[in-house]
Each structure stands twice: as structure tokens, then as C-alpha cells.
Image 1 (cartoon, helix red, strand yellow):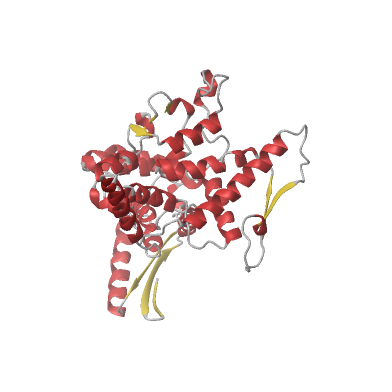
Image 2 (cartoon, rainbow, N blue to C red):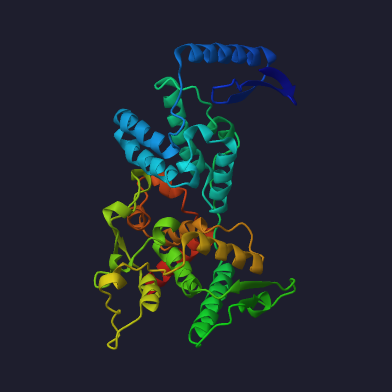
Length: 401
């Protein structure tokens, strides 16, 4: 056990490696030495009390099992409005690779790796923080209710996770055109290769920036192995700007969700998500979205959407294109085109903003986006001043006619 100064803060460290006991280590930082010493004293007292009472957690209990046990008790005390959201997050923790490890072995390094992976997937800081809060609640419960002597690794990790800033990134017409051109070219070259008898396993798709845009900036290229998922990226990009769906749910979409006659996407209840981010049960499709999905689905001889039955009906709309790969393809295309600070989630912002600029009411936009409150929807609408002048011109033309 030690107290020492590091930079401008004091750090208290308590550890135990006594033979026959599970190793224990906990550290905290404080503004003053007095606070650090007081914390150290409290930890010594708790450690001695734990040894006296024999507080030991089951060494083989996995994180996933501990979450189940905690949820069975704590869910009853949670407010109904938060219960489904926390259940969704708890089940997400049970899917991470270290959920099968003993809970006592969960380390700061495990969580830091998870945080970095979430950031790579373009998950917001506030969402990451909220997920960590669920895990922190488990450790607090284990310490206070189960009386387990166990360090909470979430404390140190939460200190490095910030709060999400409001984003107002819009997609310019030029960016829209150029990104669409890159994705269309990827699809065309993959389609050309798919029509061949065989593809050289070492061959790659190469796209140069000069094929898309002519200017004085340096030329760049991207190289990608041939893969069926490239057939869907162009359609996914268009769908993201039309459906305003969250990326994860959009790539979960199956063909049996599509109702061609009513032009609706019918999202099953189990796929609608937690209460705070619940998708609408019925999502109207714009003409542009219908056209994009028809191109992916294919048409019958009479020009109607190809009928899918059996296993074909339950296939993903975007085939083998997974959510994370779509995000990486967008990043690669942005790097190729010198487009900065554009995330896939910004496409959802763009979709909502376009509807607002077209004069849609808040209630109509909510039917598309699924936002529950005006406050949350307002974070997604970023109106360009020029759009106001456009509406005035259209109004004047209508009056003149």
C-alpha cells in the first residue's frame, strides 16, 4: 500500500498478493495527500473486514453469469423507462469476448480495448459512457450487496471517456456526388468481376482519385480485394440518406421487412431496439429508397419487385455488407477524396436535415427518424440558410402561377 504524487495529483494504491487469496489492487487519484491517505485507510479497514468475514466471490463466475445474477435482482428496482434500455446494454456486454472470462479477471486493459473498438465503429462518447455505467452498476452491486472484495475497473476507464459534442456536419452536394461515384464504381467493378468465370485470388479493385475528380490536389488510390459486399455499398449509402435509420438497425434489415405494395418497412418488435432508441414499427419509404432497394432486389419480367419466399425472404437486404465494413468503406472513400470529419452517423443527420429543409413537419420527420422527443430530433436537424430562400422562391412561383 502506498501514497505518492504524480504530476499535480496524489495517487493512493492498495494491493494484496497474500498467499491463498485472490490478488487485489485498486488505485485512486486525489487533489490532496490528506484525501489519498484517508482513502488508503478506508481500504485497509475494508480489506481487513473482508478477511475476517471471508468475503470471496466465486472464482469461476464469468462476467456474463454475474450480469445474469445481477439483472435478476436489480431489474425489479429500476424505473420502467430505463429497464429495457439497460437490458439491451447488459445483453450487449454479454456478447463481448471477455464476457466468458471470470469476472475477477476483468481488467482496465479489457475495457480500454473495448472503448477503442467502439470508437472505431463510430459509437458516440455518450453511448460508450452509458454502457460503462451499466457495468459499473454491476460492480457496485457486487461490492455492496454481495459483499465481494473486488476492484471496479470501470472507474479508471470512465475518466477517459468524454461526453459527445453536438455534431452539425452536413454533406455538401459535391461530397454527395463524389462519394456516390466511388461507391458506384466499386459496385460496377465487383459486378464485372462476378460475371467472370473465375477471379484471380490476388487481384484487387483499384480506384484512383483522378477517376472521380479532376483538380490540383495530389492523386490517391484505394485498393480492395474483390468481395461480394461491394455490390451493396452504393445502395446502402443511398438508403442511409433516405431512410434516416441508425446504422446497426439498417444493416439488420431483411427482405421480409419490405412491403412493396404499401411502400413500408415493417420492423419486427424484437428488432426495434431499446425504448430510448426504438425504431418505428412502420417506416415509410421514399420513392428514391424504393428505387434503391428494387435495384438490390431485382425485378420480375413484368417489372414488379422480385418475389422472395423461404430462405430468400429472410436474407439481409444488404447481403454480406456488414455495418462495420460499410463504415470502413466510407472512411476509405473519404480519405481518397480528401473529405474530412464525416461519419456514417452523419448520414442520419443529413437525412433528417433534408426533410426539414423540404418543409416537412416535426411529426412527419419523427415518423421517419423514430425520435421520441423534439429535443432529441433537433440535434439531428441542421438547416442551411440557403434552404429558406429556396422555400420563399417556390412560394412566390406558386403564387405567381
